[in-house]
Image 1 (cartoon, rainbow, N blue to C red):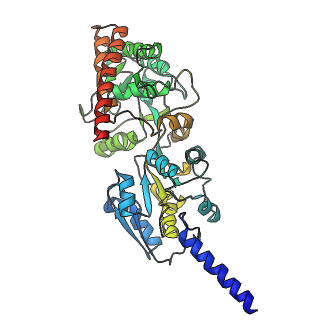
Image 2 (cartoon, rainbow, N blue to C red):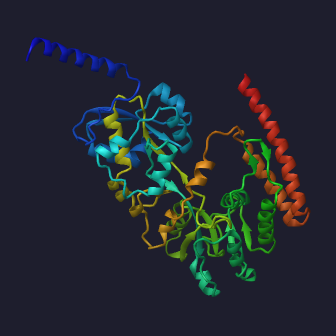
Image 3 (cartoon, rainbow, N blue to C red):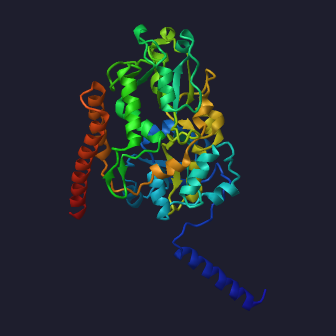
Length: 441
């Protein structure tokens, strides 16, 4: 090799090193294929802290990668602050934080890693993957091992006892309540039960695409024909005793668990927190022959249920110096092998890998993956809103009180909606002023 050629090669090599060092983008030097012997120390931000992480994933990960030390940061509410100050390699994100950090270029693009590593995404619900890609401008910056969705739970024995047909997928709320009316209240059986009025009303609003506040104009939008129909349906169900409303904590077991109500609508965690819990507590005394249908839908969009939400999304910090090890942890948490192990026990959320949902009793668990309304989720989870955090809690209380007034006959539905509109707007204006003052300080 000539001296001139050797000199030029050295110049090119040095230039490459300088450009790499000066680059503000993460280095694409990940080897993709995990080496169990790799040496690294990484930090993961995890809600609940070290003990929860070890129980969920940490002990399993260390068994596979004994030379990767994993440190855990328990705090996660102020993600941006934690990211800047403690610089975790792996971030545990809400969907809102995922969108925010993706837009700011602060998450590592996982596309090359997934492709080169031949990481199997085929077993993951593709609607969810497409949803995250759409949220990331066409790129994938994080992976969720779980999500959540609602279903209509029903008591098969009660339906059989009174010769009433089982609920069908794709029923509207009005159809569900009409079905519920067929159960005899004189026998001490309600057709439908809910744990709280606000949660039921919100589910109904969601299914019909209703918004109680115009976020652009900051105006309350409840005194409308659409809300009137919703209130008419609810008031009719409540007055006829078709709908049973139980406040949180009133009883140890709700009426559906005790076999005194035919239907309820809730998220997947109802299985673990209510049904399976009662089965464990009561043993042979527990006799609930249940199954599920898709959650009620709106008349205008009967093909999709809009209750889909994320729990946690695992992402790699764009500033990490340990991209290889960080990716191995994210990949492991979202792997088929972990999903298989977790499928043997109950969880509070649905695995995104569709073949590994806990289902020892052979129920129709596939319905939790059906008709996920991603367009609604993109709109509803848009973090760009100026509405104060506590506003919807107060508005919900206002709507509850006005609903009860209409249900008792103290007010007409029109009067109740007008009152919600006025009281809700007054509270919103007040909170916006207070929010503005705090921001100016």
